[in-house]
Image (cartoon, rainbow, N blue to C red; front, side, top):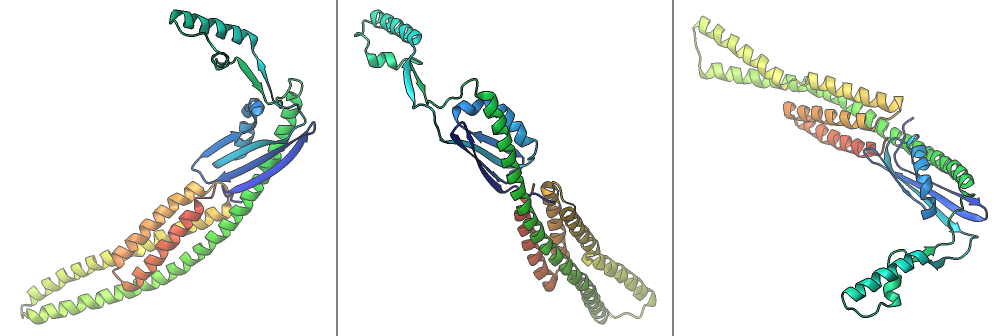
Length: 303
C-alpha cells in the first residue's frame, strides 16, 4: 500500500478522574518534522513519545497535541519562596544604599525572579508518573495507529487517481506513435517536393553531377528525418510511464521516486514537442504537461 502524508486522529483517556485529549495531525513535508505540545508537567514524557512516533512514521509534518480537559486536583496557588525573598531583599537593599535610592517596595521585591512560585494545581506527583507514562504511551500508540490508518486510506485514493492519469498517458502514447508515422511521411513529401523544385530551377545534363547532387541530397534527407524522428523519446516516455505504474502498484515509500520520474517524463514531453513541429503533437504535449503537473502536485502528499 501507499501512504499519504495527510491524516488526523483523536483520542481521549481518563487518569484518576482527570480527562485528557490526544490529537494528531499530519501534512506533507520533505522529511519527518514532529512537533509535540502538551501540559508543562508532561514535558518529561517527550523523550519517550517522540521515538514512539518516529518509529512508525517516516515522512510528513506531524503535530502531536496532548491537552488536559478537566482536573480533579486543587486550584492554582501562589507561594513565597522564603530563601529567594531574603536574597532579593538583601540585594535590593544594598543597591538602594550604594546608589542613594529610596527604600525598596513590595513591588520591587516580588518582581525579583523566583520570589513568587506559581503552581497550577495540576502537576503530577512522583507516585503518579510511572502509571501515567504507561497509559500515555499506550494511548499515543493507538492514536498513531489511527493516524496511519487514515494516511493509508488517503494514500489509496491518491493511488487510484494517479493510475487513472497513467492510463491516459498510455492512450496518448498510442496516438503519438501514430503521429510519428504521419510526421515522417509529411517530411519526406515536403523534402521530395523541394528537391524537384531544385532540379527544375537548376537543370543539368551532366549525369555525374546529377548523381553527386542526388547522393548529397539523400544524405541531407536522412539527416533531416533523423532530427525529426521521435522514436527514442517515445520509447523513454513509455518506459517512464511503466515505472510510475509499477511504483504505484508495488507500494511503499514512493513520493521522492515519483517526483524524479515526473521530472524525466516532463523532459521527454518537451523534447517531443520541440522535435515534431506538428500541430497535433503540440496539442498532445500541452495536455501531457498538464497531467504531469497534476500528478506531481498529488504525489507531494505521498510518503
